[in-house]
Image 1 (spheres, rainbow over the protein chains, first blue to last red):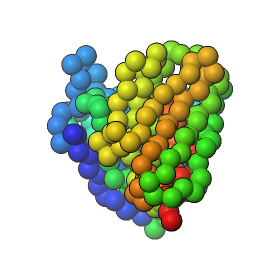
Image 2 (cartoon, rainbow over the protein chains, first blue to last red; image 1 turned 90 degrees about the vertical axis):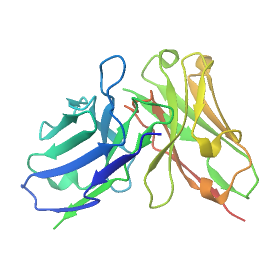
Image 3 (cartoon, helix red, strand yellow; image 1 turned 120 degrees about the horizontal axis):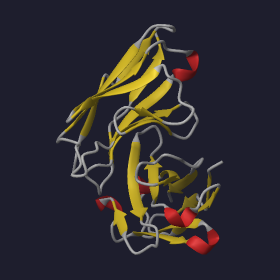
Image 4 (cartoon, rainbow over the protein chains, first blue to last red; image 1 turned 30 degrees about the vertical axis):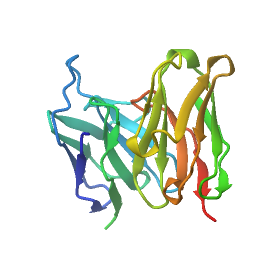
Length: 113
Length: 115
């Protein structure tokens, strides 16, 4: 199974400042079809998860452009250009290149410094 | 709009059974893989199972293989998870989600396994 790791696990932020979360996989996430199925999810307190980014860098519909994804192979990053109050919550990376199983990272909790 | 509405959660004793349902709307249900994902209290996300469009292919996380069965009824736009031989560690909020990319999620239904 592909193991996903994230750092940091806790990220105190200042509103209006940038933030960055790293995600690494235990093996390359490049699929035989050439795509890389690395996704990012946001879970606000008390809410269901919501996908933000798919295939490394594509924003889902309605996702603000302050969110961006990058990376390749086994190393990936989610960046928030200027953190807003509504961005607080837990962020998960997930791979569905080598499934089953689909695997998630442990989550990064973003809260106010 | 895509909507996924789960139901069927509740309190069940260890060794018991429960059947979860997920009613889909706002998209052509029969065209998509569907998945179940769970989240234990205060913990992270864990993929549980996925099923292909016609129900002929089913995939499970090892910890539920042989105990849980994913199924679907395309005529009713519904996804199901039959859970047998439940254990305390199955206690979680169970979400249904569209595709293995999980681009849409329901609100979840809580399953508590306790005596």
